[in-house]
Amino acid sequence: MNSRLKFISSFIASLAGIFGSLESPAQTMVCKDTVFYINFGAGNSPDINLSFLHDYRVDGGSCPNDGFYSFVSSTADCFGGNWLTVPEDHTPGDVNGKMMLVNSSEQPGQFFITKVNGLRGSTTYELSAWLVNVCRRTEGCKTLFPDIGFTIANAAGTPLAGFYTGEMPTEQTPAWRRYSSTFTTAPVIGNVFLQLNNRSPGGCGNDFALDDIVIKKCETIRTEPAKEEHKQYNKPVIKPRPFVSQPPGKDLPPITRPVPEKISPTTTRPFIKDSGRMIRPLPRVLLTRDNPVVKQIFTDSAEIRIDVYDNGVIDGDTVSIYHNNDLVIANAALLATPITFTIKVDRQHPHHELVMVANNLGSIPPNTSMMIVTTKDKRYEVFISSDDKRNAKVVIDLK
Image (cartoon, one colour):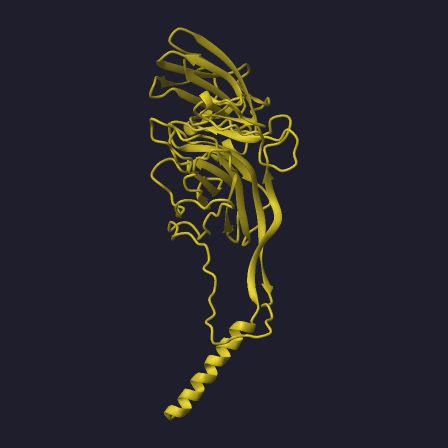
């Protein structure tokens, strides 16, 4: 083929590419069908069980202390004016609506987890939530900012997708911001959990409120390009640059960048498993059963002895015992002789949670036992009953 024919062929191919690009339908991601929603309720406190969390505990007041959270309609005059006054929650139109108010623990850690129902395999979803930094900028110390990680995980705690908000700035007045990201599920999915983790330590600042967690199903739709009366083909076609995160960890699927509606995060954070406690896997049996606190004990520093017996007739009951979410006793039979172990309570180990899990119901349901807790100067007898839907928790704290 001579040079003239090559030029004509190349020119025709270029025109075909231009006209094909301009006339072909575009694709748009639309997320509108809500499959999961939490707004923390109105009136009474919401029915959310977070009793198994390691770093956070519930507080009924509107100004929770370090390491505590509460479900409140508003907060004002907290800590000498160091917190902003947040007059209401974020949910539009609700009466006496509530938000989750979190005063950060000294160490980064998980502050919220819940099971997510309704997700299907090989489907794209949008996860979003509204947050507000409740702290004023503090003079005389380095101000810390909340940096919240959202994780979609399986029952073993393995992360499937997620995003970070980046550091949430302080404001003169409360400013709710929406953070969101999309993720696509695997073809086959089991139980799925939403985990929220604060990556920043406690100190000056780093306190926040959370509301309106939503997961929506997304679909890709084809849209026709806009018709123009006078098209100018001599201008290059520029496609919008998508918002994407930096490459995620090798064991995670790609996710889009979190995009707050009012102010963008100061940095783009890839979702990775860091070396701290970003993801603290929780045993499945603690996630899928209720974990009511049956006894709370306050004690001085000491080595505490725990003895567990069958309560009444020995009928073949077996139990497992978790200490701060770690399995310490597995499938042990309850007998007249005790299951015995010790824990150390001191300033380095001030909080202990013992969860009794029934492995079976014996011949006389439910699974019942007697736990004897011997502290430095006291002895506590705790009657425990558990079954296949409910565990039993004993909490021991440094006085």
